[in-house]
Amino acid sequence: MDSLFADDAFDRAARVVAPGAVWLPGFLDDAAQAWILRQYAAWRAGPVPAHATTIRGHPMSVTTIGLGWHWRPGRYDREAKDVNNERVLPFPDWMTRLGRQVIAATAEAVAADPDSPSPVPASWGLDPDAYSPDVALVNYYDESAKMGMHQDKDEHDPAPVVSLSLGDSCTFRFGNTETKNRPYEDIRLASGDAFVFGGPARFAYHGVTRIHPGTAPEAARLSDLGGGRTNITMRATGRD
Ligand code: SIN
Ligand code: MN
Image: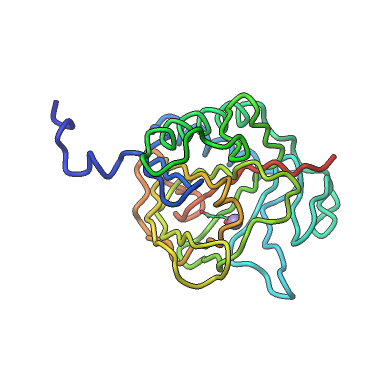
């Protein structure tokens, strides 16, 4: 009963941030967070190591592992031609199942939101059974890493992006589809949170302005990396 009227009870509810964009705090419990981070430790062993992708001649401050596809700005390949030419690991089936659970919870949150259109357009991609991501970009942020405002637009399929956060909290900036500037909202994404952007929000600019060191829960401490944050984004590339 202690938790029923806890201070954070209302903050933990799913929230529609913008049409098509939903924040699902605490979607993953401690056991799920720890289990996914064990998979992350295995992915780091290769065949393609976590690497800093080069954008316009500059290495990103995050390191990335691709599952299903290897991403570089403007392209997806099966082999990491700019790293070691190895083929990336396959996209795991469990991640499709997890992505569908997130989409189902997102659909519920959208349906419960009085400002949502009714019926919700099929183009928002919130039918869980139809959600078939084929790439996950797994990013690691050390305490000083950031990600500038950008759109996820290298996919040919407008299915929603499902994001999962693990480890330290971050400040996630979620903006608009027109510019990198205001209006935007700064959201503190914590370990276990899911965030979905699809439909009218699919091409919204977004970024990570800072990591909050030492905020990871016990179950999701990236101790072997000296802390930090891992984020997984699932997408459907629409490529074959
Ligand atoms: C991304 O934009 O691809 C990652 C966002 C995040 O780390 O939360
Ligand atoms: Mn992105």
